[in-house]
Length: 398
Image 1 (cartoon, rainbow, N blue to C red):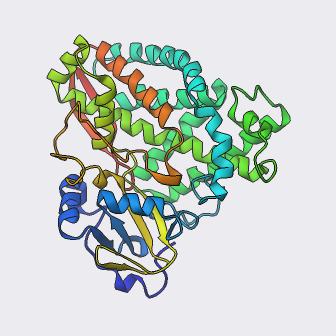
Image 2 (cartoon, one colour; image 1 turned 180 degrees about the vertical axis):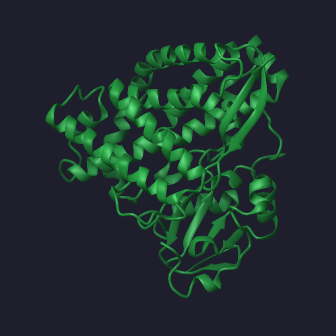
């Protein structure tokens, strides 16, 4: 949705998320906003505000009574009617019904169980990178690894993995190319994939311990079993959230290392705290630049009145460069501690899959450390609002 009628004219044009300043120097533009207008208005897509400071993003993330996820979670909003994104599009206590069912698949014992097959997949993909003179890291590793990891976690078979990979590739290309009609068409196809997956599992249930859909069907949530639409909605969110976002982050990790031969060398020598390094990568290259909420009532932040019904973007990428929380926020500090970044959000909508994302990052670091020394190639592309990170990365081996 856009801001309610009459609201757009009240919103100043403090910044343009897809304008020249943001596209050429996003971090510089966000730094300007934090300094001069921390609650920044934009008339793009019908009008909305962006929260840019750490404290404001945390406050809004935790206050679902004032900033609800039930109306809109992205901007520009999709014009289509499709499956609900569950639990993302529900606030507490309704969201608890879905999170409790999904949480079982992200516990420590489940993560340990999927690590070996994920490492085997990564090793096969790494061989493909070595076999090419100028490998493209996104399509050669990050995309098939994140899709394959998702399929291992969810219990999907090879044919399902291949179809999901194709849809994910086409969706990313359409969104980053600004072809929203095409993106909407692919989004409907992803809805269809989720529906077909649930129909298949209802007809032939699999092991509920290793297959997410079968596990959700077997779970007994408060309020009764999940409906067909609820199951499909949970699967739908997982299909995109578990693939597109981590893909960008893994490419950003490789991009950073490709530009820092000293860090590469120390990584290979085993003299880097890899867990701390990943946390700093997450702070600097938060792949979800922003998620959107809608104000349920008129409220004031930083002296700015946000009207009822106005979309509000919580900019995690900007919050993670806030100097009041992170000393020298624009500098990459590989062993930064403490590191209270918001790459996975905070509050009732904190990312359920962060344990899997961090496992993917650890495995990817191991792969990158085992490659010959590499540099950035000629072709590099970055994601656009509301995502962040590298989407296409050509590597050149030294």
